Structure formats: structure tokens, C-alpha cells
Length: 629
Image (cartoon, rainbow, N blue to C red; front, side):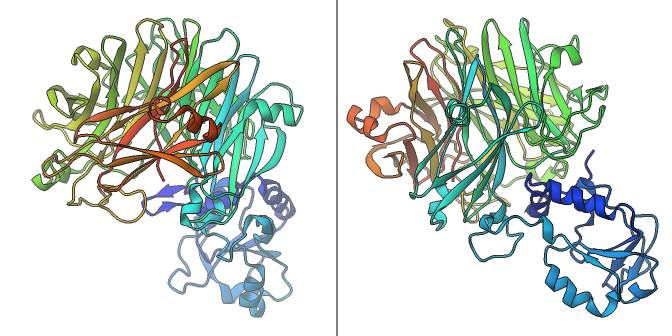
């Protein structure tokens, strides 16, 4: 495993992003090589050492120096004890490596104790100046708005990344998407910049266009994205569509990659009858993954199935899950032990000539079951709620499978609450106090006679504990066409004026989060057919009392960010609404919006949640949860 600190309760470790950035890997490798034959004293003023050595383990220390008088003589984690920086002259070392990106600052600080020993720092591992257009500290999180995307252009599939310049809402004046495309072996295929000048402009990066622009062969790999000029936050959000070409009817959509590696990932379904489940393992670092470091296990069980092959830096490898973990079938679910080598992986399911793709989710290591959730104040109503669509039962099958999403969670006491589109409760269904290794999926279309939505909530009637990180996988199948899609999401407390810790979450600012800002891309033409977008908006309520109908406005934007039309709708508390832009807006307005245009869904009275996708004239459809900003 990589012994690195990536993400914790205070957010992401920006140092990890700075040291793992593809542009500086070679600089750090050169530093490793230069110091490999020397006795090195490492001065670590800001506690960088764990992450530095996790990514670059050849940077060995003969001596660890400290300026903290209370740390002198304590274990240095390297087989010795920490030495006072003022005693550097008596240390038997050839040079000093100060773990700082500020060389001049270190020269000034250490000048009186260095003597004739050369000083090295991390200065050469700084990104070029163009990556820092604003005056702020180098390790400011907005200097490292980065992410990865699964990206391919083959004879069978195309991909398209779609998002918008939401950073202009935080004062960003101009953006530049710096992009590097890695092929299946991890080699760099192309590198370019995508400038975004207009506020609120749409952003589209199409694999077919990239292939043509750079005269590339077909590829399956990953796209590294660095948004230069970001303000407000460092989260690179996008939707990624996958299209089957020619006679392939496949169509699917998945979410952003989540830029932080994890020790474990969940929400990987075992193969159903006639299915091949393919995990796209994509090395997120410039470091080889040794054979045996990544493995699978049945959720809640400790028999491990390792990948016994090395994975090269930035390599993309397709793993046939059914072959690696034999005789395990849906509705069993699998866990990926990834050793912090990967950002959120994608998996792909091939069944009866159709392919669908979805993502796994980060399984948290720092979260423990919390008895106070069971004793939560009645002021919070039903507490945590996980809403998801139930499509028309006469046309679709809708399944839900609860997933453990923290390493220590042993039980999941759960109930399904069912609602029609008008918010009328249709009943509930107790799932039980599910064990971690449960192998169940519930056919929600058999519990409802009309379209609407369902909500997973905690129910402690048979005991159990909860951790507040309620997750589930939702699977949908069109009965007539056999097309399927799936997504997964986590629960929150929704639409209560009272707060519980960080809930109800807000897109910006502290809780309570009682407003909505959701992004819905428009459809486009693909190989001569019109693909139309849709989303199901849900008004989830942890506490229904006192809630009025929503006052939701759908703002139609052009690809350059200009708003050209808007439509208002209302959704009842605990209700839902199927939004189809081609039915709500005039044809001329949609043409003016064009490809790259989008709908911004705003509501200042409540927090809505939604699931979006595309549909083809032949009945193919995609579905994943929406993102907001």
C-alpha cells in the first residue's frame, strides 16, 4: 500500500496532490536519484515526510532534524531519534533536504547551521508559474483543482466529458483546463489546454474530437484534468457519457472520479447470470503497483483474491471480476482493497450485447458507528434519507442494494419508505438489520404500482447501529428493450431547519442547506440520432411538517453561458418531477442553446436532489446522480 495521507475530516491533503501531479513526478524521481548515494539529513518543518516517502520511498534519511525542542530525542520513524536542527554540524551527513517548496525561506532559516553542506528543497517540484494565476500560497487547494476521468475512443465506444464553468460563481475570471491523456500502458498520448473565457460557459471534451485533433490511434485510458484559475473550491465535477457506436446500443453515464485515493472502495456488484463485470483499474500515480497489493473480497468476508500482476504508472487494466472471484454472483457485492493507489474506479457490465458503466465509492476508514444517530432528536424527523427514483413499474424494473461504506460498519438497520410523484406516502417496507455481508437486492417495482421514488432510512426496531454514511446501489432495467443502467449514492439529512452536526449539507457555506443548484446537460446528436436529456428531481424531506411546495426554476443556458429562457415548476414535499428539457422549452431555444448548453436548476426554498441521463429513440437510457455547485 501507499502510506500517504490523502483525505480526512478537514478535507483533502493538498500536499498529496502537489507531489503526485504528473508534471512533477520526473522531478521527484531525479531528486531521488541525485540523493541515492548520499547520507541525507531531512528537515521536515511542516510534517510532509509521510506523504513524501509514501510516494517517493527512495528518499531515505540518515538523520531527521527538528526545530521543536519537545521532539528532540523522540522516535523519528526511520530507526533513530530526532535531532535538534542547531546540532546539524555534528551530524554525519553529506547534505540537507528541507521538505519545503520555499527554497529561499529555507536558506534564510538554516543558513547559520548548514556550514558547507548543500541544501536541497522541493522547489524544483513546483508547478510552472502559469498554474498559479492568483497570488496565494503554493499549497492553496485552489492551485490543485485536479481530477481523473476514464476516457476512451475505440471502434466500439466514444466518451464525452461535460460540465460548466461553475467557478465563475466564485469570482474566477478565466479558466484553463490543462489536460493530459494517458493510453492503456500509461504512456502520454496527448497534452493540451482547453480555455474557458465566458462565465458559466459549458465545457465539453469529446474523445472523438481529441482523436481527430491529435491524429491518435484508438485508445482506452485516463484523462488527467487540472483546472487552472479555479476559485471557491478545488472539486472538479463532471458527467461522463459513454456511447456505443454503430449497431452497439450501449449508452451510460457516470460521475466525476473523486480525486482522492482510498484504502477501500465499495458498491461493486458481483456478476449476474450472463454478465461479465469488468473493473477498469487505473493507476493514479507515477509509481508502479506491485503484484498482490490490490485485491477483491466478498463484502464482509476476509478471503482475498489478489491481482497477481504489476500495474505500471498510469496504466489502465481491465480486470474480469468473475474470473478473479469465481462462483460469486449477484446480489452478492464485492469490496476492492486498493491500497490508496487508485482514485474512484469505474466498472463495466456486459450483458446480452449491451454495456453499462458506473463508478465505485470511497469506503471511509475514519468513520465509526455512532449510537447518537439512534437517539437523534425528533426535531430531525427521520434523520438520514437516501432518495432514489422508482421508474414506472409497468415499463421498468427498479432494484436497490444497500452497501456498507465504512470499514468498521457491521450492521445496517434499514427501511424503505415509498412515495408517488405527488408526495403521497404509499407505505414502507422493513429490510431488517442487515449484516455487513448480506447478499440482498430488493425489487422496488414490486412494491409500487406507479412511478415515484423511494427513500432508504434507518430503522432500529431489530437493533443495530449506524454510521451516518448510508449508501446503496440502484439498478434499472427497461422491460421491453432490456436496456439497463445503475448508479449509487449516499444519504443525507434533507430539508430540516434544525441542524445535526454538518447536516443538512449546503453546496456552499455552513448548514442548514436549504437551496438547490443542480446541473443538467442538454442532449446532442450522435451518429445521426438525437439523444435527449432528462432528470428526475426529488424533494426529499427528513421532516415533512412545515414544508411547502418547491419554487423551482429551470434556467436554460447556451454553451457560452448566456441564459436565454427559464421555466418554473413546483414539486410537493416528498414528491418528484421528471424533467425533460425538450418538453419544457421551445425548439428554437434548445437549438440556440446548442451542444454544450445546459439547464441550471435553482431553488431558494428547499434542497432538491436528482438523477440525470440521456435517452435514445431506440429506448436506450443512462442514469446517474446529479451534481451541484
